[in-house]
Length: 229
Length: 229
DNA sequence: CACTTGACGACCGACCGTCGGTCTGTAAAA
DNA sequence: TTTTACAGACCGACGGTCGGTCGTCAAGTG
Image (cartoon, rainbow over all chains, first blue to last red):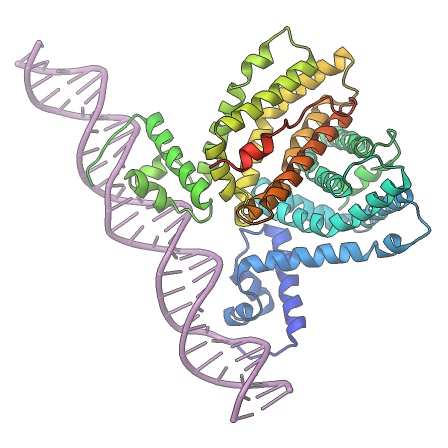
């Protein structure tokens, strides 16, 4: 095999790209290091020069994903003209927008990540995104607390709880995915949508807001994401 | 090696006992099938006669744990004289009591299960207990809804959210465990206790109750469990 | 009733393939 | 020449398989 030398950062990202594609296609456990290096044509030694273990791939991928997720909402976070509720709703709206924009890719990843044998992968991604989003959401809630609109004793705790609510949608989403292609698909999407609305209400209540203050989903959102190809 | 034949159920439980002890001592990944069979003196073939894969051990263990957890609160669930709030609080009180009773064992298991490399183990146990508790809690909340004390649109969704709140304590508990033995231990326990109180408030609010209706922790509970030897 | 027989299923343990990871060496870059 | 990036043969451990063996127990036999 001819030897090709690249700049470390490029090579590292190349490896992460390949690994991410494979993980989202077959899952973490069912993807081997050999699969990854075969895809981009490097050797074992080359791989372990950049990563100290297969586990490191997960860290690298989740870190990248989380980082650029937060990068895409930075402007909202730094806009001083927004009050806390507007900032929070803007943040959520932007998140939805991003999801709808690459709904097909997202949906394809969902198909794999939400399979029971890939729980690890799901939780790793989730944990990474929570880690990145926690200070962000904590800041918003703290602002709301000083503004007197959010009634919470501890902004950070509230942020953690709300972020973890996402994880409790796992089963509901998994059920919807399982129903894809069956006669129950429509009903499953409807059920998921209603479930997500209730999560919005739960967030309202945790923050001490009247029900409906935070539109967690908007009409058609759930269907748009879940039926994307 | 002499051959000892036992009744299948006994042998199966013997294997599960050994595996459970090892998993709670070293974690799932760091325990090998050979470790398990060595501990009770059976062969590979014997093991795979009762279990089709190492993964099956997790299923078996979590199923057992969850099942006898629900068995220990059955009387409360079937007592027709209790209204929903009393039933819920009784349920939580019983759960705390059970935790305090075998706090030392619990704490020892925590030390292992809450380590980052054992996230899988943690989530499996959690998922199993949620699966068992979901119908139970759903029933209680549904009762409360018909009684007009809980203001929730969908009891099952509420149950899932509340049960998943437990998972969001993971990081807080892990932080406290990490602080054990350091100068911050006391402060960490205090912080965890406060965090847990807020979870109680979150449950109040999700169910549409006034803050403080559900004592999620009681004075000294957190410390009792976290300092147990 | 004592004894043999035979089938079934619990159990044995040598063996295998795979996979994550290591190590020595080498070509390219600095 | 030194350092860095990569090659690829190799290793040990682990999950899992497979043909075979031995205990158990019920039915048959005298």
